[in-house]
Length: 495
Image 1 (cartoon, rainbow, N blue to C red):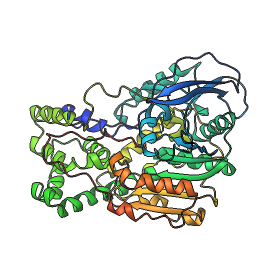
Image 2: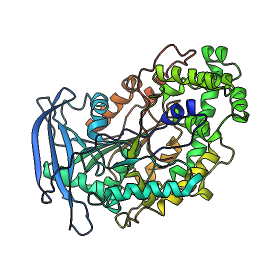
Image 3: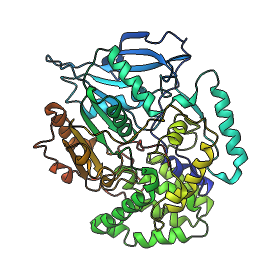
Image 4: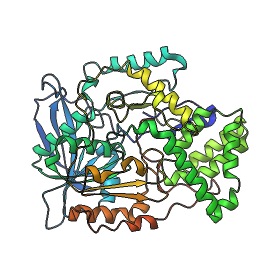
């Protein structure tokens, strides 16, 4: 769902793809419709781990229960310890559009390796993603330069979905109801919710609808349901960029190699050959991960050095591809479709141009244009009745752990501020200098143990979050000679 216009064609693709959405999984095969409630489960091996794989058929229209049924795909990684506990960990994928099965299993099973000893890990593809009637369409034009082309692209997408899906039923609320039905079919009662980015949003929707079924809730890089977080992107992104500049100035290696970083950035923004829309969106995307942020000073200097010359931009693009900063040509040709009904129907995801904050931010104008694009596109998407009772966070005494990076350009800690007024048994934890996505090495330094202790005790009392301040950030890159340890991050697919 992240899309924007080119800087200069040689590097536009690279920078835009640095902002692409959380992976969407695989398109589901066209399974024959079966009666609602039909459950299929089999033994399988997933990511070299023994598992149970299956599908549960549910009504697409949960308002009436009539009409088409769709398969909801799930995978259960069973606890392998001698003392298996009844409350599993339920993962909610990012996006909107990520596949819990295809995208999250390798990462989350590694993040929660200590918990799988005693608890099952449950991965359920959200309706419209992966193996749950996965829906994808070619990406539409990223600007309103030609509204006719945007309209034709959206109309062609909707026409291609006829007979397979009615988008008004592909919202977070109905997806949460699918999850509850799958958990019931698998004989799970109370569960521990685990979600990052949009997954943190979907976990809150589940908690709001089914509070009695939630034992604990862990939210990573998330925002409250009643926070118009998309309208706050410019402020959050500028703060993340300012933190980068300050960290570079205080870092011996970075300050020596990039002594005029802020000034170079200002020169780049002022250059006549620069397409601001793509530079701004590309930088926002690079700021989404601590790993990729480590390359940003080098990228700024390298871009400025090209002076817009095509041969130099071509060479720079090749360097960025070689280190793994961008996937190179041929990457994303289609995108998850569920971003449309969610982005158009749910308050947290909607954005209006007048509501965009912080005009002084480098990302302000780009966000305004994006909001205008969405306002137009949403006039073409069928209005969703399924989200009509979508509401704010539900007050609860369940234990909640929230972890946000202070340099997150989309979901900074302020978006979870005041949680204890709603969830008195909660803990807000901030990771200094961390971004939206944290690599597995950083996670194992602190986060994994925190979450394990939290879930095992079902309490935030005595939970020591001090280790978050000690987590090492990736070293700044000073040349294009070394690759990233992790791929470009997954994040919210809506800007």
